[in-house]
Length: 501
Image (cartoon, rainbow, N blue to C red):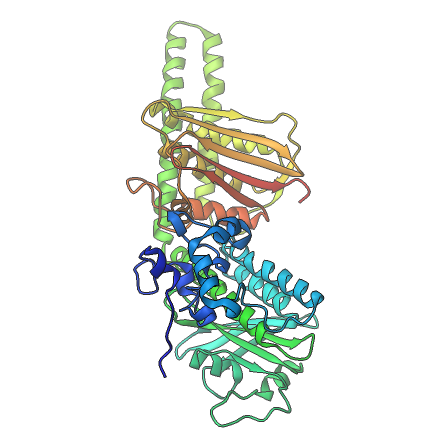
């Protein structure tokens, strides 16, 4: 019997962002909510879905948009049409008392924060670590494991820590195991009693050989497929041994919702890794472009000071020779350091972290680009906090971050009246480095695109891997990068380095 769906939000609002549109709304993609309030996907419970785009704006989770949603005519319509059957949230099935409701709300709030947590991380290993942590918390499981498809023919690979030892997992993509079956059939598997459960024909079995190989014991097991943006299976998330003895239907619902965010985060991290691996020649090109700035400034300085020294010798003005020689000597040292860095550069070598003066690192980077700023008639200023204490950091890494951010800021400035400010300050236990400009600014979509390799806010300039490089360096420092930008209002990029690291 065919399912009859009532009018969904995209039908009623006529936004053109239904599941078959080129740019579907997140509510149109939420297959885990199909059937709720007689809707397709989350078409009639859209108020619970983060990132929806009603009225042309991008909205956050329900806590951010509740006032707007509760006034929405479509929300009122669904409530009136469903009457006693109306479902405000998807999580009421197993709530029996106040404590259960409180726990469910806490889990729901945690789930809503998953998007920002996962999508602020770009390294694949870090993404997987965050996924397993959140999956374990969401389901109150003893442990969680992410298995990703790799190789040809594809197999499920992953690793986890057990009693202080790293266990590697390699499982075939077939129906001989619950995880293989979940990935192969693109369907969740929930086993409540792994060793005593009987399995009907066609159901997913629990492979006891896994426990034997890893020296562990599985009582209950929940396996949910992880898919990319085109619904292709990337692997699975597993939760093992529930604190209450089994994984409920709500646990499965949470994991299926979470798997959507996890899949997008894994896809983004993989694309970044692939782009970095495939783009090493492009990275060399970017490095050469950066070197050209430095070499041009050094060359100008050498030519200028050489001319001053020559004229001073002709006029027998030794005080001018001495003054010019100090400038010349400083730039010769910069050139020598540059040659040494180029000859010894290894992109795989970890940056050396040591206590140092952040102001000095920032000042050196700003000095490098002063000539370029003058050429473009842009005012480049450094406002350095004299009270800034020393901070453990990689001078080379942070120097490169500042150069990339300042170059981006110069590119964003208007043809006249451009201004870029690089500032430092000590704030809440952090050394904060901010590069701000009065340029064209960015909307949310442009900010997201700029964090992706080979994408740039200005199609005329750059290779588009500068900002992801900054993110990578910042993450290796255990720091964070914040972006504050609005269209027409300029941009500010801030790096927060711990003063206690």
